[in-house]
Image 1: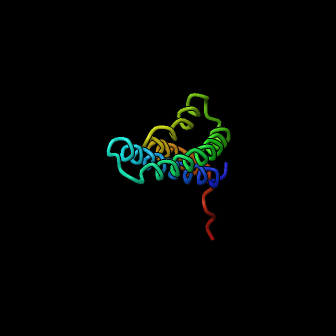
Image 2: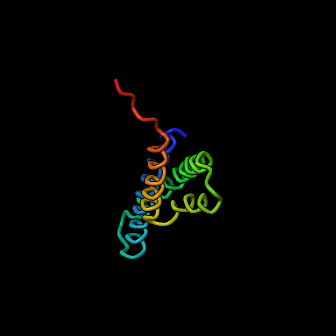
Image 3: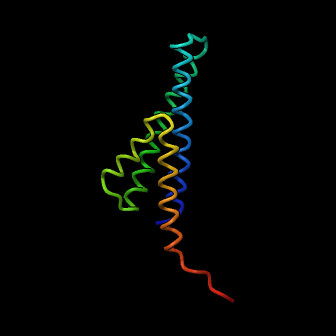
Length: 112
């Protein structure tokens, strides 16, 4: 597996996580604080998060397929984009795990 697969997943995990946190803050502003303009923010962020979450799903599924994860772990990663801040924690755990496998899979540099 190439590092670029992990990098794509990481970028989308951060984007999805940030947009979901913004969406939650927008909902609090719209319904809890009754702020003007929050409805427009919420609508834009919701649409962006929805479309980018689909891209996150594609990249996360690709990563899981190439890493040969079991179904339970794959679902855990896929659903992380639906729980506020979960994408950050799951991304960190997955990155640590895969970086360790990359480190053991890379050949040692040749001495001159």
